Image 1 (cartoon, rainbow, N blue to C red):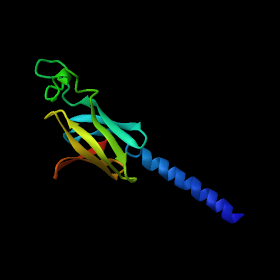
Image 2 (tube, rainbow, N blue to C red):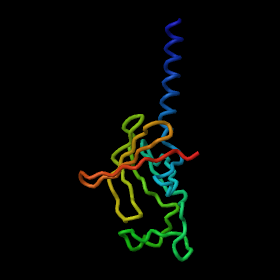
Image 3 (cartoon, one colour):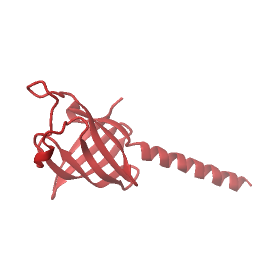
Length: 143
């Protein structure tokens, strides 16, 4: 009887850790230099995405909300930066790693291969790569 109680306790405990680790990347993150706040959420089975919630400098020189003027697709150049999905289809590989996704950079209008790794509860490393050249940023949990 003690073994059954222990087994049930261990299953409940592992379910608690699994749900805590799954939600650990979810939420709002401040990008490097506090340029923007990105919200990471689930966007499918085992997939995670992120969109820009706010910008440190949301207005352009004419006082209008910044647009995605560097987008390679002319039809998307007029879309606002705030609300733009920049992370897509990142797949959970472990409790601290999400990979095989994409990151869109509105500063140059290009999309790169992406992965992100949780360094601790409040620190996320986001990496964008083209071929073998990668650039990483460290984001901090907002709030």
